[in-house]
Amino acid sequence: MAETIFGKIANAEVEADLVYEDDEVVAFRDLNPQAPVHVLVIPRKPIPTLNEAKSDDAELLGRLLLTAAKVAEQEGIAEQGYRTVINCNAGGGQTVYHLHVHLIGGRPLQWPPG
Ligand code: AMP
Image (cartoon, rainbow, N blue to C red):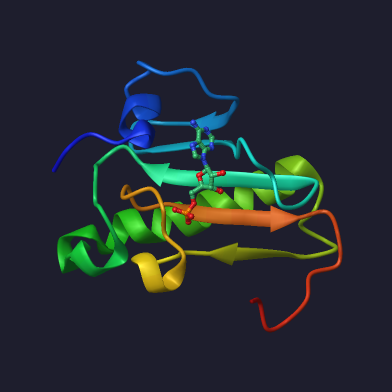
């Protein structure tokens, strides 16, 4: 697959406001935040969408969610609550084809989302 902007952030070819990174996962602030806290958690591995994730990726997918929870704690929104979202393909609102979890919080969130 062609490298996306998130692949370039994961490889440190493009700057981002990183809040966490390890061998497998990178988390950085969204450029166009939808809430006081809006962080994107991505795998370094370039999986385009959730549809392409395989059973071999199960641990990695778990790491993405555990990282989101860790960042929520770091950002001080764990207690009040937050939302994690994975948009899949155009119908789900996905615009960058490198799997990512949105961590959104710091304000009251409506349900259902639009
Ligand atoms: P999605 O629509 O689920 O694919 O989410 C893509 C998100 O990436 C949007 O919220 C964008 O604001 C955000 N975004 C795009 N480019 C960058 C970038 N270079 N750094 C940080 N966030 C970005």
